[in-house]
Image (cartoon, rainbow, N blue to C red):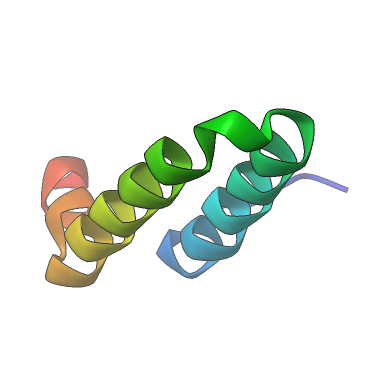
Length: 53
């Protein structure tokens, strides 16, 4: 089964990775949350869609 990634899969993958990092290294909570919010904000603005065209 091939893994087809599209922009709708991006946010859950980032959230999953951020959650795992927070569980492993709780000291980095502020950094992980800040990066997550920036990435989701850029994704919401459509920056990643513009890079593909």
